[in-house]
Image (cartoon, rainbow, N blue to C red; front, side, top):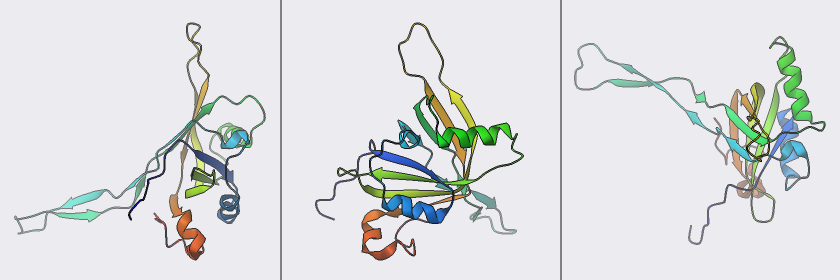
Length: 180
């Protein structure tokens, strides 16, 4: 691809939706938002790996089979300045943590990497997600730093789709992205 320039990672948006179908609608209207729930300073953990199990076949000494195991996903880690106003995301986390995991309300997280125009160039859908850890940064009277809240989320699986391919009609099948 002559002239291809990889996207930069400093413009992104995060949305929390109830169902995957709503995520497609949300991604179609995404762009830079003033919504506090979409404003994060850092998103990490978009990762999948297939661990393997070594198997030594009886009588075969030249090699060991590597048998694939189920996919293993990293926790999605979201960081932002501490939100003191009402936030749907904070409300969802508080509801989950106060239930002592007795009532887990799963949602779909939509992370969009934004291009120069502020529109998505790549979108990741994290299905059946729920928070497992919330943390506030240290308070220190010697530092003049913003308090950062960190949220760790687990999820069942994720799918990604290039919005360039979606615009050419591949969004219905999700075949253009990586489905894990």
